[in-house]
Image (cartoon, rainbow, N blue to C red):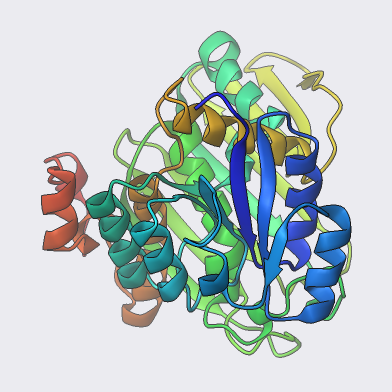
Length: 359
């Protein structure tokens, strides 16, 4: 597949605006189809992609025009028909996270795509930030293996702003499903480990604009011994955001003070942190460029497909474990939440090391 990959973009809301810009600037991809039930959204997108075919119903585009892949930018709930259309038409899938609004539904999608031989990648763009890649290098070159961490994300997310998606205002566990999924996935990715125990509490402060719980506190243990204290909220009662991810390692610490940058490190005896010079970065664009490049490389067989649906299930199990732990007051091992169908399809069972947590 050396010709530009032909993409159908489904869902033309806030996230799609970034994707149209990125895809239109890429020599490796082209947008051939646009799907959204809102006429104004289709008109706006057609102005940016004049050669594409637009429709309100995905059934009028997917499988009916020549394409190679579908980029799903719809809310996570209600993607059943989309996934079925993609699998029947043998079109590769790049889906915005989370893949579904329940782990059980996400598992069905993963098994469906695997059975159809359809590549399925989830848009976990935070993995592709320069700050994330440089953190990995610091572990290897400066501070040694991670031992424990503290991850704090405090934000007043005004869900009424026009530039933001509105569905999180009414969804169950919006912080976990829409924001913490990034953070939990980053922990797995950066620490190169799988969680074996999560003890969590979710709640909603009285001033929250969200219908369900917008705060998450969790203590997470990984199979390599790393322990992380996590605090995340969309209902911080101060409009100035705060982010800090500190990891204490064998020979020092790594500190990230902005979710898109501000990376520093120090050895034990250092009097001050050393700043890492990161390349210039445009938020939501550069990470999408890197993610799209990985998707293209995976489809062309240049490297294994990254952020696969099956790998995504492991991060979604962390979300599920947080919810169950908050409901029961007990620690939960995410690997114990795998279904028999998932284990059989993956031909993998949790290792003895993964089984050491409590449920």
